[in-house]
Length: 377
Image (cartoon, rainbow, N blue to C red; front, side, top):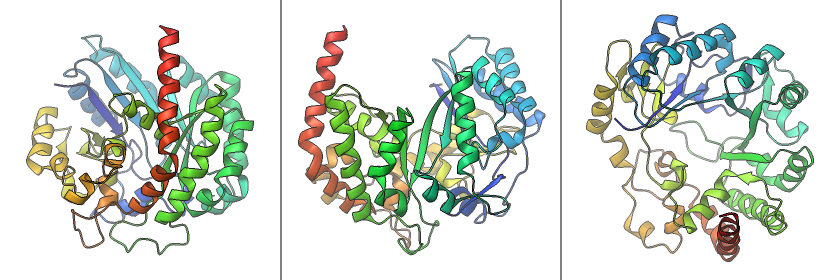
């Protein structure tokens, strides 16, 4: 059994915020049962027991939603207790949680620090942009509350990174956003493309990210990042750091940049398991950890051909000079509204814009990284 990666949705799609573009809200409306409520302690025990006991090498346990903190702090403490009980092989366990930050208190911060949780907190750029798309359950603004949470993180020493959804407004204002993030001392950033509703014609929503807009976003962001890199003061930006690693001969940790789906175990609140966060849909259910072994779930994934299908790149794509870095991108972005699995990545034009403009400097960034690695040895 390889290292086990769990992405648990302990409060299903429940959330204390209402974001206009939420991909998981869209997914829940496309399955027979929209919400599975909160995970019970019995299910939690089975999830931990059936994964940690058989894992080898390491195990990552991440939490997402919806908003996972709605599960309650007491249940997260039970996670740690059950892991400590069942980790009889003493493998390294890494904890992470993706939160909107809206309900975080000092008690949460103490728990995160004590148990070495890495926190991803969602911020959509500047206050005006964030509040336009990320609303409270009552429709109000949320930016100021999230900034209070980040202040708590800083005060308590919580380890966190900033996750920003790249929709149209974020893409068009990335220069101001980057400068604001740097001013605040946010040195760990992840930018993920905004997804249109599953199955809908792309580009029709007010927030939709168009390919050319995405390409311009990547170029503008890279320009700023590269200038800081030359000064030795660049932030970690997952996508760029992965491209540099690939040029140095390393395997990217992001499945989007590998161009093939990875072995994920997305666990809904009822214990059911799915192969990817973008496909927590009835047709993709691999079993339930209340009554199914992890090996049986892995076997079901193989039988479904979930990972194999993501290798189905068009021959024209493989012949592209940028394929060695692009690799076709995320499978979700390669499927058309009609279900064609052999199409170009929706953002292909944007990727080409970026690589054509920035590839020489990516190579230079790799050389800089290599020198720094050698000097540190």
